[in-house]
Length: 431
Ligand SMILES: C[S@@+](CC[C@H](N)C(=O)[O-])C[C@H]1O[C@@H](n2cnc3c(N)ncnc32)[C@H](O)[C@@H]1O
Image (cartoon, rainbow, N blue to C red; front, side, top):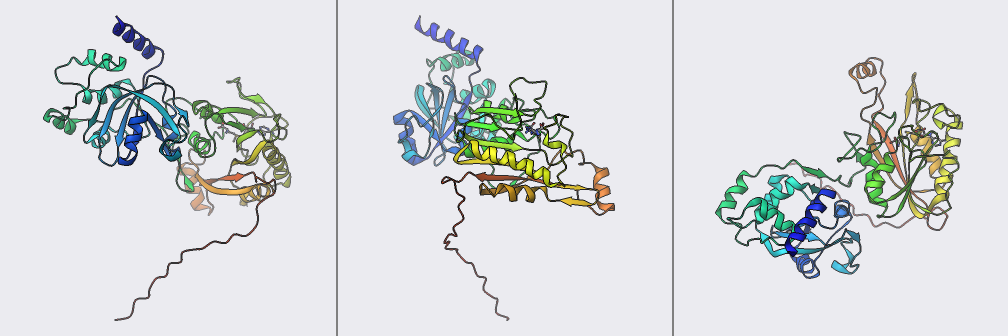
């Protein structure tokens, strides 16, 4: 009787929200703690995928030292930060509590298998793909459909002898699975190049909106500088890319534009030079402002995009936005500002440098990122030809300035003592 109830419950859960599959990792050192606490955890690098885990999802644990893939587990609650703050010395704060479905089976060559199936640590498995992986834990001579149902309800058995010859053969034939979603990766260098405006299954912002921001750029700032539940503000949010990224990543977001687009009602109308929020209340501000009057966003009189970046006025108006961003940010928190230079009618305007000199009046620099410009209207063969013929350059990149509001309220300018490691190259002696 009880089993049937469980099956019905799981089926309803699957109907309401698809059950997804996830791979967590451990080492020889951390494996025992995972299995005794029945807690899986990870660092910021994989935090975004871990925080997608919802109660009922299926999990596997890959020991990256010996390549065993332990399964099958089920999340007993939604993932949270610091469920056990002291686990693994505090190194893996994005955590999920799990229960095992039957015996815990170590599947040898698990890492190899995942690679062949195209499953990585940033993959979210959808039901079809997940059941293909689950099948490696199925005892011989069991009916596939019935067993899958049982394993999802926790009544199914898994079999330690799974790596019998039949499965070694299978390993060779395993194909890449398709129903998978890849979570973006944290960028490691100061050169960011996003070939597409969007990532993942859900739309973020509107790629038809002039000057729309690459969603992965915002995703990177969100995951580098905030935690789930933090507040993000975009005072010039255009089609709402920041709002959509934050909604998916479990951040609160308040987004404004001087003229919110008609196709959405969750963007507030406001002039970025006066933001209706308290001082020191925000965890991250992101701004992709106009770069001058090169794009016609709208005719609203307060639209800074109606002012030429060749005038001082443009930078003075942006400075009013800078002081507002400064005021609302909590001390120590980050402002990300995306901007590009201008070259029009034989005149180059270093918009990035001019804005940066205003920004550093208030903020400390965290870093400066070069963002490749893609899908610009000038990104055509005709324009490339003109650039060569008439000896000018097309804009190939934008600046992403990452700045921090100083903690003391005063900019940190003291020189620091650094002990460099110098490398010298020995001169070759002539023969
Ligand atoms: C580069 S777009 C932002 C694109 C946006 N991040 C997206 O992904 O769709 C710049 C935006 O700044 C807005 N804007 C211009 N002046 C403004 C002001 N004074 N206050 C608020 N928004 C302003 C424009 O309406 C435009 O939507």
